[in-house]
Length: 435
Image 1 (cartoon, one colour):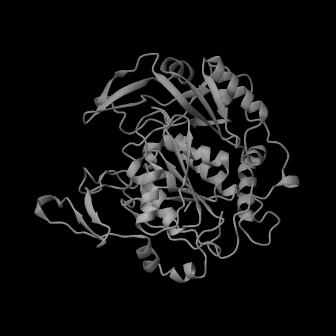
Image 2 (cartoon, helix red, strand yellow):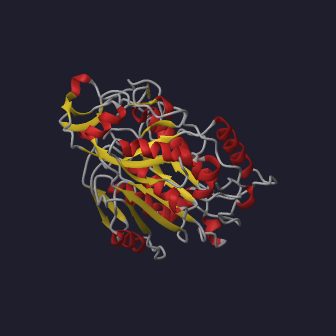
Image 3 (cartoon, helix red, strand yellow):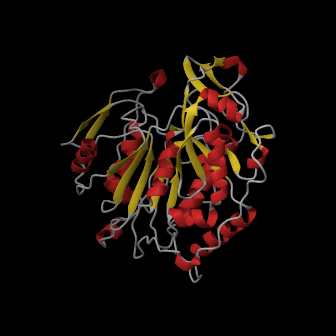
């Protein structure tokens, strides 16, 4: 993780956009080897024989909108349940050791200072034991699931199957929910697992299609004149309120945050890398056109697709915004877009985020999406906590947009005039390990 003394940053939630400025004064991100610092292997957490007859419930994992009044029945047995994630725990001793490592890795003068771990090293020190991975994998395969991947950090096992297998293994059904004309899918009750796995398994990735949404809102289109640099919106505020027009380019950001002197000194993000998590792909030609329009150096980002290509979808505006602004503010930095289609029951941001960790090629991860803690549930909140923990151990700084709802993070201000859902924040960014 980059320290504030070495990293000139500007991060604001502007309609949910996390804008990150990378302008290093000296120290580049270095992924040092832990080598002899690796500790002994983890102790097994699976206790006894995995008996399906002896079960425990994973409480707090039903989405708030999966209510009987919206329920239109369970899905067919063959309904695809792909790319699910079994979220794994670590022992109390491992948690303590990880907390100590993270403290020392970010404290100058300690033996672990900036000795970032690779994903495999993280898994060996702070992930599940081999025997535990084998037990969990065998149980999943015994219920007919295909195990796609054990992530190197050993905090998640990805597996695929169908709704009938989910019911048999986790004793919960996947139902359809019709809400305001839209169909969603979610588990109707809290999942269950064998009691022998309770020490190892924290949960299964949120089993629903109420996925996180980009925080940016598009008010409408506008015409931009590149000669006069004037834009004219083609929309008005409701109730005849007219419109307010303003436009911001990279030069405006540099002026507002008083960093032109940093640029003049030649610090423009060289040697740095920024990963953007997305659920939409982009057209690189449009990014190149943006750079040309504002007189920026040609620096086309890299796109990494995890699983199926989501194509351009309703989150494309957020993807362009994040990629273009990150590359504009730090024009010499490498920008990588991680995009994924996830699955109906697995949020693509989780698969994108885990891919970024596994690749271990960026020093910063920025994400401009939000989902309140209640919607994420116990498993989702645990998954994002562990993702940002591992990122910090790998020397990756995580930025997440807070959104404009403040402590009313579960309210939809497109439909509510005032907060009605109580105190809540964006669970994807409420951990101690992200900015």
